[in-house]
Length: 215
Image 1 (cartoon, rainbow, N blue to C red):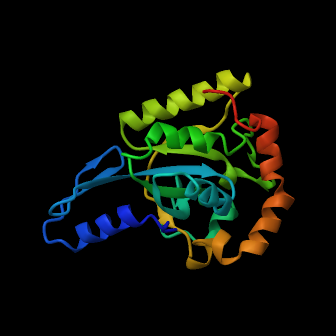
Image 2: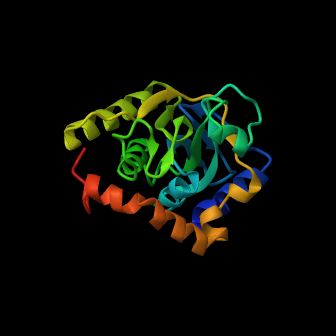
């Protein structure tokens, strides 16, 4: 989902339109250079159950530019939703985040993500059960891995319980079908009812409290 953050989006659009756009990858990051306004954007991938809920939570974070629900971690190319939820593809329900690292760091994103889920649940997330809905942080490069390890170990210390959120190497990310992109915006009333019925926010509050302990 593309968020309305004018300054960032205008600069990115200008950069993409310019003839001298350069791309460099480092731990999931990309450098996009416009003629007069260099901007660096980076990506991160998180799995936390219902990807509409994860997308909505991540979109609320300052510095996030775009979120894309999809599938990753499995062995099937071009997976479809029904294939993935069957549990036979090895894929996780996940969200790819594009963000501005000058506004929010990877470590901050990972901390906010883990506080939005139940990292102690090894069988799924909230009312979404099964391997497809397990929580995970998919990392690219050692710096992301170090940050993810720090966040997971910090959550374990803060909660005093085993944290089972996995740290996995990033593989190909497959965007979900169009009807699942921006689902929480396109189907706002239905989504809100589903989120309440699933007990997601209630359980998060029980685990983390209103503010959440420091990690």
